[in-house]
Amino acid sequence: MTDTNIELNNTIYQRMKKIITLFVLSIAFGSTLLAQGKYFTRDGNISFFSETPVEDIEAHNKKATCVLDDETGTLEFAVLIKSFEFEKALMEEHFNENYMESNEYPKATFKGKILDYAGVRDSGFPPGVELKAQGTMMIHGVEKEITTTGYVTRDGENMQLKSSFVVKPEDYNIEIPNTVRDNIAKEIAVNVDAELKPLKK
Image (cartoon, rainbow, N blue to C red; front, side):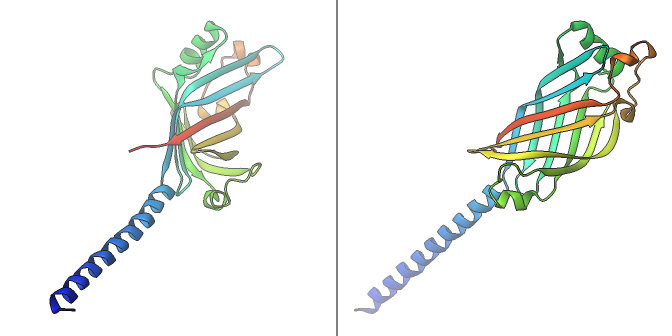
C-alpha cells in the first residue's frame, strides 16, 4: 500500500469518525429537546358551580390557554372572564358587570409548578396518581398563593390535565350584594379539564 493510499484511508477514517460522533450527538440532543418540550392548548375547559338552596349557578369556558413545561413541571393558565357561558343571559350579565367587573379585570391566571412532576413523568404517568400544584392564582386583580391537586396523564403525544378546587369570592375581593347573597355559594367549585398538544416551534 502506497503512502498516498494510507493517507487517503486515514482521511476517510477521520471523516467517518466525525460523522459517527455528530450522529450520536444529534441523537442525544434530540432526546434532550424532547424531554424539554412544552405542551399547549387554547381550548382548555374550565367550569364552576355554585350550589345554594335558592339557586344553582353553572358556567363553562372552553377557551382557556395553558402551557406545561415537560422538563420542569411549570404550569400556566389564562382565561378570559367574558368567555364564561351561562344558561341564563342575565346571570352572565351580572357575573361580568356586577361581580367580576370583567372590563376592568379581563383575565384570571394561574402560574405555578406541579410538584414531583419529573418523578411521575419518568414513571410513565401511572393512572390514579394525584399530584399537587403550587402557585399564584390571580382573579379580579387579586393574587393569592394556592395549592391544589389534580391528575396528569399522557394520551399518545398529548397530555391531559384535570383538577378540582374551591374558590372563595371574598378571598379575591369579589363583593356579593346583600340582595343576592343567598343565591351565591360562599365556596365555588371549580373544575379544570385540558388536553395539551406538543408546542411546535
